[in-house]
Length: 135
Image (tube, rainbow, N blue to C red; front, side, top):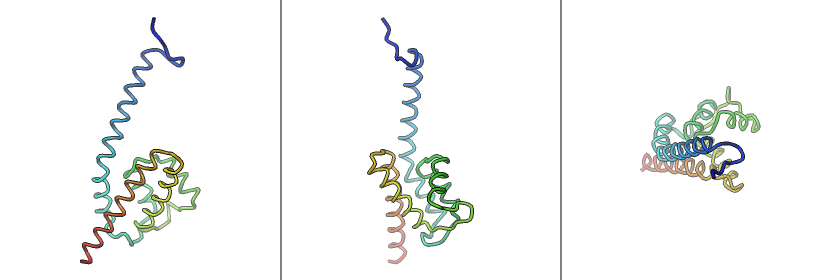
């Protein structure tokens, strides 16, 4: 006798398993490339104090951590961030992103820890770069 999930056939289950496996592998691959993404970001935005267009950071957040457009857009709107005309420094971007990531982590959202790691790493890399330039 074959057991079926109440929502589909065995074929649906296999398809779902394959999708879940591929999704997990893509996430692992994405996380492994985080350092490369941070390095590229730092090449594009070398001065952490300089003001850049808010839209650059809006797009960069998706590039760095894979956040979806809708979530970024809703967040900016709810926080009063003008992605069309606003200007922020890299340090502002990191500070805001870390604050939100820590809130997600405390709420038990696993993705928050990943975001926290990416932005903490980026913050540290900028500090290392700044110390090297000073010393």
